[in-house]
Length: 110
Length: 122
Image 1 (cartoon, rainbow over the protein chains, first blue to last red):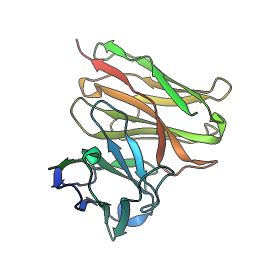
Image 2 (cartoon, helix red, strand yellow; image 1 turned 45 degrees about the vertical axis):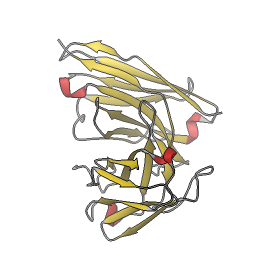
Image 3 (cartoon, rainbow over the protein chains, first blue to last red; image 1 turned 90 degrees about the vertical axis):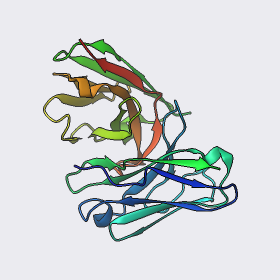
Image 4 (cartoon, rainbow over the protein chains, first blue to last red; image 1 turned 180 degrees about the vertical axis):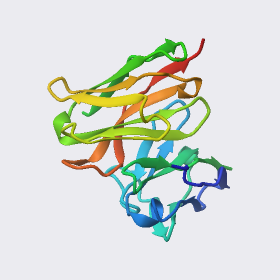
């Protein structure tokens, strides 16, 4: 199972919006709505920020939103803040009943 | 509160075995599927395996299939990962993670442990 494709890095200024893409195939992202996103700060465990493509867990800011079109899922962070600087990973269920993560995106707040 | 605490990591020679444990507390362990996820130093996340809430179903990443075995003891609220025939490329922080959905599996991970480092080196 190949990793989902994400851009290596995305940057934005405070207050701006950024979008991270996550491209897979019809066997994973395109075939199911089991897409989730994780935020990981250095030296810390990942944190769930979006599940079921667009749902937010309790306690996650509404500045985080998710969507999907075809084989590509997207995470948008609006009103970018310094604390959003981190690595972000998408994940999807696959037809093999396995999970697959994206390659990861480093978000820099300028 | 939900807590997941991994243990069992360390330095091991190629070809040898290691068993990781993940002690769970703060929730009804027997109601939730559990996963192992790993991260090589400086690299991205890699999903490793899932076990259903009752232990009946297990699935593995191709990279570990036939070498790793996931298991659980619901009476002890503990998840395990038996790692055999270890390779240098298995060097990583190994995390246990709870599946988001009670009574099923969603492949979303809502709680994570702090991770335990496995280093495979001669």
